[in-house]
Length: 135
Image (cartoon, rainbow, N blue to C red; front, side, top):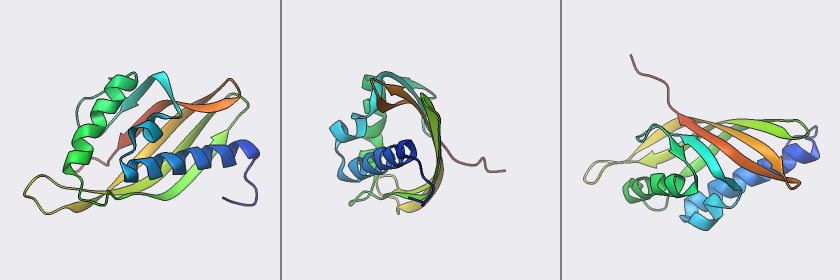
């Protein structure tokens, strides 16, 4: 939090930090808590697109299966822009992953989150995870 954060920016920062904490705990209820039922996610591994919470939940199953324990899911930098009804956040993040039998390694990735204020509460309507393309 910076000294110049608005009340909305503080609320969104808390929402994203709580979400990352829920990922570390493998708490699906906490992961989904502030997401719209019809949210859309673009992720690094397939599928290309997950629409709706049931599809979103399914994308976490392979992540948790392949993640070393304890799960690493850290926010390295987070920036937020909030209007009255919509907001977005961008973050650089780090997780550890690996395949069964492989040595786990750190994965740095980008996160973009789109939010709408629904019933006076910030709600994630879009989540996009990405990694730079390798040449």
